[in-house]
Length: 94
Image (cartoon, rainbow, N blue to C red; front, side, top):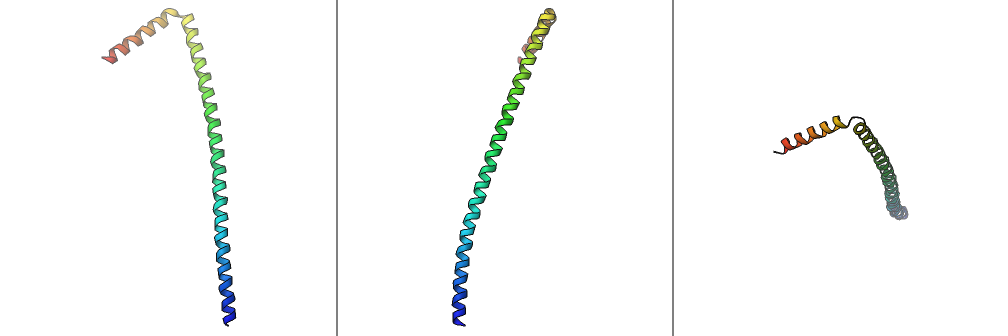
Protein backbone atom coordinates (compact mmCIF):
# COMPACT_ATOMS: atom_id res chain seq x y z
CA UNK A 1 0.00 0.00 0.00
CA UNK A 2 2.81 2.38 0.86
CA UNK A 3 4.48 1.59 -2.47
CA UNK A 4 1.24 2.42 -4.27
CA UNK A 5 0.95 5.72 -2.37
CA UNK A 6 4.54 6.64 -3.33
CA UNK A 7 3.87 5.85 -6.98
CA UNK A 8 0.65 7.88 -6.98
CA UNK A 9 2.46 10.76 -5.30
CA UNK A 10 5.21 10.68 -7.96
CA UNK A 11 2.62 10.39 -10.71
CA UNK A 12 0.74 13.36 -9.25
CA UNK A 13 3.96 15.43 -9.17
CA UNK A 14 4.75 14.47 -12.77
CA UNK A 15 1.23 15.35 -13.87
CA UNK A 16 1.48 18.75 -12.17
CA UNK A 17 4.77 19.57 -13.86
CA UNK A 18 3.42 18.49 -17.25
CA UNK A 19 0.28 20.58 -16.76
CA UNK A 20 2.43 23.58 -15.77
CA UNK A 21 4.57 23.10 -18.88
CA UNK A 22 1.45 22.69 -21.00
CA UNK A 23 -0.03 25.87 -19.58
CA UNK A 24 3.12 27.74 -20.56
CA UNK A 25 2.91 26.33 -24.08
CA UNK A 26 -0.77 27.24 -24.31
CA UNK A 27 0.03 30.76 -23.13
CA UNK A 28 2.78 31.08 -25.74
CA UNK A 29 0.43 29.77 -28.46
CA UNK A 30 -2.31 32.23 -27.48
CA UNK A 31 0.16 35.14 -27.40
CA UNK A 32 1.55 34.25 -30.83
CA UNK A 33 -1.93 33.83 -32.27
CA UNK A 34 -3.09 37.18 -30.88
CA UNK A 35 0.04 38.87 -32.22
CA UNK A 36 -0.68 37.42 -35.67
CA UNK A 37 -4.28 38.56 -35.57
CA UNK A 38 -3.27 42.07 -34.49
CA UNK A 39 -0.72 42.22 -37.29
CA UNK A 40 -3.34 41.24 -39.88
CA UNK A 41 -5.84 43.74 -38.49
CA UNK A 42 -3.21 46.48 -38.55
CA UNK A 43 -2.30 45.64 -42.17
CA UNK A 44 -5.96 45.58 -43.24
CA UNK A 45 -6.64 48.88 -41.46
CA UNK A 46 -3.70 50.48 -43.25
CA UNK A 47 -4.97 49.15 -46.58
CA UNK A 48 -8.45 50.57 -45.93
CA UNK A 49 -6.95 53.90 -44.86
CA UNK A 50 -4.91 54.07 -48.07
CA UNK A 51 -7.98 53.24 -50.17
CA UNK A 52 -10.11 55.89 -48.44
CA UNK A 53 -7.34 58.47 -48.86
CA UNK A 54 -7.07 57.66 -52.56
CA UNK A 55 -10.85 57.97 -53.01
CA UNK A 56 -10.91 61.28 -51.11
CA UNK A 57 -8.10 62.64 -53.28
CA UNK A 58 -9.91 61.52 -56.40
CA UNK A 59 -13.19 63.09 -55.27
CA UNK A 60 -11.41 66.31 -54.30
CA UNK A 61 -9.81 66.49 -57.73
CA UNK A 62 -13.19 65.92 -59.37
CA UNK A 63 -14.75 68.68 -57.26
CA UNK A 64 -12.03 71.13 -58.25
CA UNK A 65 -12.51 70.23 -61.92
CA UNK A 66 -16.26 70.85 -61.63
CA UNK A 67 -15.72 74.22 -59.94
CA UNK A 68 -13.21 75.30 -62.58
CA UNK A 69 -15.62 74.21 -65.30
CA UNK A 70 -18.47 76.20 -63.73
CA UNK A 71 -16.26 79.28 -63.30
CA UNK A 72 -15.27 79.09 -66.96
CA UNK A 73 -18.86 78.51 -68.09
CA UNK A 74 -20.61 81.07 -65.84
CA UNK A 75 -18.06 83.50 -64.44
CA UNK A 76 -20.57 86.19 -63.34
CA UNK A 77 -22.75 83.69 -61.48
CA UNK A 78 -19.73 82.27 -59.68
CA UNK A 79 -18.55 85.77 -58.80
CA UNK A 80 -21.97 86.57 -57.33
CA UNK A 81 -21.97 83.33 -55.33
CA UNK A 82 -18.46 84.04 -53.99
CA UNK A 83 -19.49 87.58 -52.99
CA UNK A 84 -22.59 86.19 -51.23
CA UNK A 85 -20.54 83.64 -49.31
CA UNK A 86 -18.06 86.34 -48.32
CA UNK A 87 -20.90 88.56 -47.12
CA UNK A 88 -22.40 85.73 -45.04
CA UNK A 89 -19.05 84.99 -43.44
CA UNK A 90 -18.62 88.65 -42.63
CA UNK A 91 -22.05 88.86 -41.01
CA UNK A 92 -21.53 85.61 -39.09
CA UNK A 93 -18.16 86.78 -37.78
CA UNK A 94 -19.70 89.81 -36.07
